[in-house]
Length: 362
Length: 93
Image (tube, rainbow over all chains, first blue to last red; front, side, top):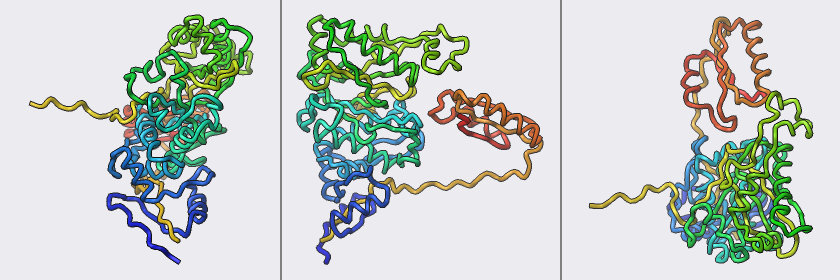
């Protein structure tokens, strides 16, 4: 029995299918390799149009072009994948901004998604949009903390899979990957921090909402509840960064550090802010190439044993994020995929980051 | 009841390209090797170089290395490749 289905908006270019029901849609999408293995929300024309309406974009608007394979991403295709991930229209501006940021040349999206290194795209939210979409920054922040961040992170992954063919074994050649490749999105705890927000520290106006994207490895959790001294607390973070440099990649890049309230309170009490923390980690997160001999990599030290490597190209390259539940002396470092081959990009939400300024009218 | 749903993939038509003319012999030819520059490539491409000269009588082997192994080859390398009879581009790592 067929009921009448709504017409496709004229502007839509996508092929459509008339399926029996939601259960049929699940099998239809899974069987074509169009999911991450979890159930999807069927992307009906109405749901996709609602996302486009929210961002005031026509279906054929070009969100950006992946620079290496020169693939255009339209608002229509991105919205379809966002709906499938479970996004509401109010989530879609974040997905759009994150994708625009990922398509900037310095992000090297193709390399990050094709690499055997297996990184994921970490999306960090700042500004009032965090509250509008109901994201949370406290308990289980690097897990499934809330609906908004879960579906936004998933939308990014589904868009990569479906629009840019970043499926495992196709473009995605990850040896291992990590759980962040299902969804990897967090919101900063701006209310619980007296620092300027991450976005503000990266030159986004205070009143704007923004996303920062980082090609990122899995989080490495640390714990130090046995001191209140900033230096000693940060020594634990620095040690984890050095361990990553020895064991994974020695090259400097954008390291993210997630600091929960307990450590932040010690920092605040001692008068340490973003700058002091970044400067300290810049000085301490260093290894010599000779240290490779302690982790089984002695064969590639050669005559450069005394060469010193810093985790950060500069203190400004640290992405310090206030987030985490109220109790526990925990934090995490999130290493970059591969040095500076991909750079973190921050973009305001609702802004056109490639637009030319308006020409002067006479 | 029927639900109407949309295709999430790019649906972009892939441009097909004509394959280059196949060589019938490597003898006397110029072969370019484009290395991604990773640790293991030095030994790998040195071996390929030797095989090409000794076993296939290749006249000249040119080795070029990308500056970023995760990014496409630089335009200068692509331009230079137009002068080669054959290109071997691989990971070797």
